[in-house]
Image 1 (spheres, rainbow, N blue to C red):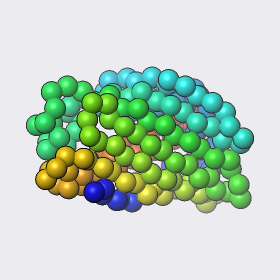
Image 2: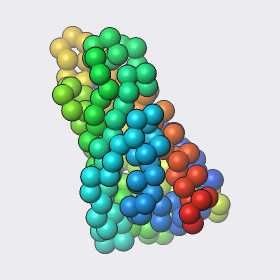
Image 3: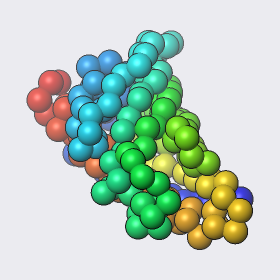
Image 4: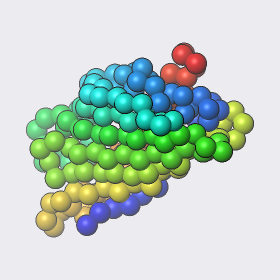
Length: 167
């Protein structure tokens, strides 16, 4: 079973700059270096037709995980996340992501709609979290989903910061 959630983040930058950040390998290097207390890496980045795709190897230390998850694991989690960003069309951008947590039955994926209104950009995420543990997955999924929402909010702050420093 999977838990669905929605997360909306606001970035105080115009959509053109947000798209420019999301399609820039240097932004993703900044993102993985700062999103978690333990830095990750950009495994691969490829520009696509008006967009880009980033394959990220990230590390989630135990302290950022929900209590219910911490009790079941003994070390930081290694996450492979692939983010695909589409072209900017009529002030909107579509993106999607998939993520697998190495060595665990946890995965998450989602889609985002990036839209601008003057100097402000909103990203509306539709997320799906799966924890494939019999009898316990349904109880843990909402906690992982909540943590994912916090991660997406922190990532929005990093987008805003990187744009302010670089664009």
